[in-house]
Each structure stands twice: as C-alpha cells, then as structure tokens.
Length: 343
Image (cartoon, rainbow, N blue to C red; front, side):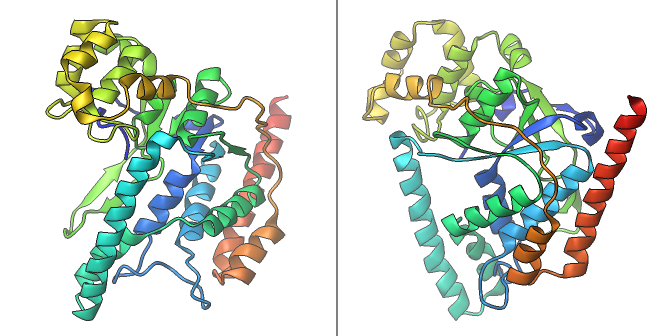
C-alpha cells in the first residue's frame, strides 16, 4: 500500500547515467506484482505459455532487469521473509478486494465486456510462490545477488542502504524512508514513456531521487518523528491512520508535540481507531528484524539456464531472449576491457 507522504518529499530528477556502477536494492515482490498486474493482453488476460502458465512476471523481470543492467546498474533483489503479524489486516483487506474484483470479472466475462475484463482482471492478480521461485532462478542466472529478508523486503533493503552497502532503494513507495533508507530512487520501473489510460497522450518518466537527511531537515523532524508522522496518515500496520489527518496536518501535529508521542496519540484518540497500542506499531517499524549476514556477489551470466527457463520451459522467442543475453555478455567484456585499460 505504501505511506501517503509523497506530497511532503522533495524529489530531484536525475539521469539513469548518474546511477551507473551504483548498487541499487529492489523489493522483488513489488516489481513482480507490478509486472503481473500490468503486462496483460487487451482483455486483461496475463501472458501465458502453451500450457496455460502465467509468464507476465518473467517477461517484465527479464526486460526491466536486463535494461537496467545494460545501463550499468548493479542490482540486488530482496525477497520478503516472514511478514509481521500486524500486517495481517492489510493482507485481509487486499484479499477481500481481490474477491470483489473476481466477482466483477466473472460478470464482465459473461457480458463480453472487454473493457470490464481488462479492468478487473489485473485486480485479481496473485503472485504465487512458484512465480517467485522462477523469478529467483532468472535473477541468479543473470548473475545478480539475492537477499532473503527476515521480515519485510523494504526494511531489509533500507537497512542495506543505511549501512552503506547499497546506494539506494528503487521503489515508488515512501515506506523505505520510514524504515531508515538514506536514499530512494523512483521510476526505475517506469523509465521511458507510457501511454495514459483511455487517452492518446503519453507520460514521460525519468528517475527521481530523495535523500532522507534532506527530507528530515526540510520538515524539521528526526526519523523517530517521521515514523510517527507516517503512523498518523497510515501504514501497512495501521491502515488508514487517524481519520481526518493528512500529511501536512500530521506534520503540524508532530512538530507541535515534539517527542511527546504518548500525549500526541492520546490527544488524537489513537484508541478509537486501533485495537493495538501505538507503541506496537512504532517499535515494529523502528526495530523490524533485518539480517546482516548477506553477501553481495555479482557472478557471470548463465546463458544456458536463461535459455532453459525462458525458451525451453516457457516458450519465449529464442532470438529475442538470447540476443539480449549476448548484449549483456558484450557489455561485460567491454567493461572488463575498459577497467583493464584504466588500470
């Protein structure tokens, strides 16, 4: 869902070239879910192979990852671990929305309503364990490291950036700032131009970066107060936040109460909206489990494994897939030669 504080942030536009050679952490589930909801046919049906197995996730992952690799980015994919108990309500909310969408999709199919089918099909998308395992196989075959988070992937990625092992987290959400990421890059999954829904116009996307320290200084708060601000407007652990409080109003309250969080939540009637004490959410966000025993190693490209998964198993066009693989190999050779020459 993400934390709705974008209006308070100062994003600075950058060029993809500015990220060349830098380590970028990616929340794998976030990217994969985006692919299975957007890469679909006109009637909303996901891409499938001849056996009826969904391949939208592989199509998007291969295309986006190799594109960024060819631009010189060093990618790290982070997968979710055991999600916090407080996230159950958010999971239940999403499940109910999918059930409603499934009912509307069935009705659209019966009425042969193509627009309705397209609209509701994407809302029923599910990222299965099998899809995630295939994604892991492809990522490893591309020679990229994978980190298995103890809990939330966004929190793990944020920790890696804060520790200095990565330059930024790539995400559209603001949760990573709440988790302490010192730098966030947006629009890496939207590079280029995209056609607007139901329109002939296009939107153009370029990478944007936001710095945590700049954000805190501009807002006049510290990270603990940022967590409280996020809780006021709503996180995945307290959906909806305090009724009637938006980002700007939340900032005013946080500044006014300073570090007296108990008084703030008492005066704003936290207990009327949530069963758990505010401290449960606050300390979960502040102290969410992360691991530091990860290894960031970029290995060679396993062309045969890519061929097996993409071409032999799921029937992607061999010429297209292997053509990109050859580009990656040439890129690696060129970079190695350049490094040797510089040395």
